[in-house]
Image 1: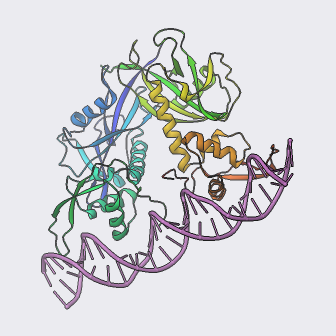
Image 2: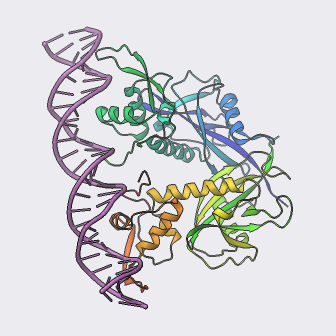
Image 3: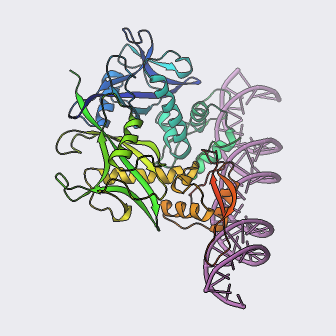
Length: 220
Length: 220
DNA sequence: TGAATAGTGTCTGTTAGACACTATTCA
DNA sequence: TGAATAGTGTCTAACAGACACTATTCA
């Protein structure tokens, strides 16, 4: 006989708000792990594709319908007692989002990842796997822009890199590298109005998915 | 009601034999996909962890009990009609193996990946995802040595890189980079006996998991 | 000896990081 | 004017790739 297992999709949705990396979470109001923070998730339906399930969970459970969130599969978590009630296999998805309006689901909220100590199940592990993946993706893909609004400055993008990587970057070198990477940024011609500084060029995401050359976070 | 789904673990086990990348496969002897090549796989049991399931499939189904194979999770494949009989979610694992003796399971065999045209289900896609992951791992981890026997020469390791990446590398630059990468290779003091050439130093795998600096396959 | 493979040294172009310097705004 | 941020240019050390050269074996 073939064992059949409930399979859930859990989302690590990250964004940059203020000066911190934030995750989309809710506080559990019943056991198990009552009072702990949890990622949004849901069971996949019998005829549902995995990306479709992730998009459905994002729209319905996470309260972000139609939001411009980059979703990609993270990894699958399956040790038998990760849910004390019954065995549940979880296919985790990573979502990268710009600083969006509050979720339409009242119980969901953005919380700084550094503040999320008590998390339900293995969600803390999953979240940190997602953060590590996000950091790696910034190196060799253009997904840093997924954290930014449609139009953004080089300083906006630099702040994303600094917060996800947890280190400061030289604004001048960053500017040079990011504007030279082919297809990363498309100038809009417009500039920001700022207080006490030279206005910055506004850019849109370019067509490149992969960065040439990559933005390495090796030493320094 | 929570839908329950059969979950399998499928293995992309790769090795370097002769001058080609090989995968561990079997030829299906019944429908669906009769006569096509398939990866080894098996359903996970109700109380079984995913890595344990992968190790079990490697030992029992793939016929490689106790073999020194590096196993890591690749990704999960879940669209509903990937198996025409019933929906099966597949958690794929990538295995990197040295050139081992033939599998103890008679129906399993090593086949050059370039020769594997007709593959069952989505196994061709899974296999190429595994090959791409292997290529990426060679860049920044010491897993190239996982394709080599316990003691190997720099030329052995270079052949691994060349075959997985599908391009030739300068032997002299490769030698310099690989011997300088901290903790990658440990000299044994012994040398090989060869025909018509200077004997090569034999090395063992060093303690490093990550390569500093990485072996990038950018241009050139 | 020559062929073959192992291993070292050197050169050149590119790049990362440090940082001086200019540009443009607001108060 | 000074403070603040944007953006450019320059220097240096490190590194990748090209390749000359030496070392050690077998036939």
